[in-house]
Length: 388
Image 1 (cartoon, rainbow, N blue to C red):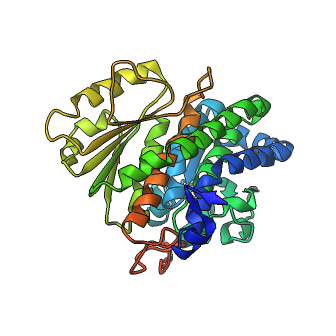
Image 2 (image 1 turned 60 degrees about the vertical axis):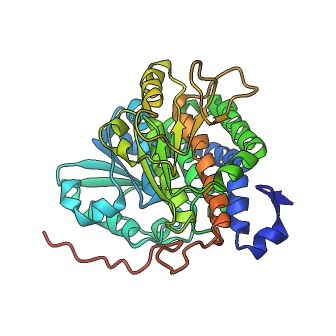
């Protein structure tokens, strides 16, 4: 069997088997995630129906990659649940808990975690329980035996443990990220779940199309001599830009420095980072209103130092715009995905680029950190007592 163009024996020799398998396995994993949610729909509805009426705020949280999930989900959580929704990483909740937890509050804390063994994961939950008037917990995790899943709370708590294949074994999160993102999206649409089956299939088709037809393109990009990559996305795709920038940095052990921003935000100073050794990825919306702002930025990108290459990632064709490399998702489907589902697919080019560039640099993608600066589960984080 091959993954990303390489057979398993070669991938194992290069320390790349887990990463390649986990990237290429995402379309199937999304299918399994949908059916898992479907199998637990009544339990999820019962939990949400019991806690949401009294909930005043929802906080979407996680550390690192898991913390980026909320940036793609909070608009749909706000629309579907009609609550005030914040995205606050556990790393911020732990250091400044009094800024986010209040004694007169009734809070739903939605925690995303691959393993749930990062020290901040349970520390954030404990601080929420200590400082909030009332807190309910929705835990979305890939490890049934992780500390977060096993944490016993005196408050309402629902554990959603995703399919076993979601629990990535490689250092960099790929399938775990997208499966948790999909789970969150489906939970927000829990009352319309059956109607989303075709959209999940369509997203899987897009991912399979990317993996089958653009691997050679991305591998060619990875062979270029670049030192920086910029990822731009707006709305729910800003979360994809965040995750994309981290993925390439992690998989290249920081040898490639990455940045993310929104299309409008990039104009306000960060655009200066572009030079002749920079790749610029445009993660494009399918909303015609948003296109106007994206178009203006793209047309202005060559005013100043031109990048090494521009890469457009888009669902359908963009009239009047050209990119050095165009990655088009929609080749066969006549309908468009809901914009809030595009982040699922939009991160895959960065996963592929990070994987191929890791190999190009002589690293092992499954564990690219040469000096151990980063690890699969963060280490040596000491949680200090919080004194009121």
